[in-house]
Length: 249
Image 1 (tube, rainbow, N blue to C red):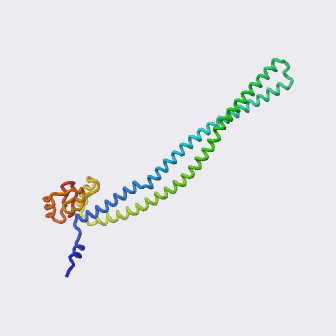
Image 2: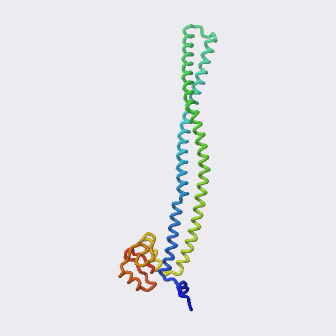
Image 3: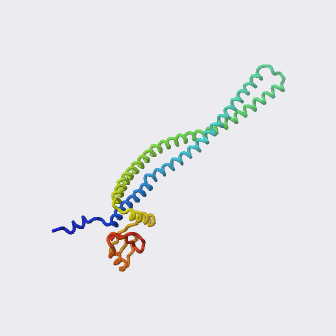
């Protein structure tokens, strides 16, 4: 005596059931693509890159200011060196005996005093700038260290993203293969209808009719409509009168 359950299991799939099998794989592919495009690892890497950009901008500002101060110190040191040379020249002239006129000696002495005051002023300015420069140099070094730490962290995050992407690509390859197998025996015209509905209806073109409820829009169909659908041939492409999706009885 034959087993009716076994006979039912071996019954060939209807066209709509084949389309539903394709729909299941397309839905899985859509979900995998969405996961791939919204990986938390990608968001974490993007946030990390934003953090790196912030530290780099801060370091750039500090370094720019440090270079400005270093340039100012170099100019001041040059000016101080020139003043020292002039002071030495004036001092030699005063003590050389070449100048004997008191007024000229007095002028040289005034110039020497003026030059020394100018030297003191420039050296004081240099010290003040160095007091700002030294902490900046330490800050730049600290930011360099922070960037090195972030680079290591970035490599780790990049590897985590790559691993997640590879895993999802493997799953996509598997799902795409299953989809191709499911579509092998589907009529080209029916498949074109299915693809058009997928585009039109947000990715879901086929749904099961469970009782009187459409599995696509989850609305109850009228008893008259359900009765009409049940009277259609198994391979007839019947649609939900609420959402337009193909229904599998």
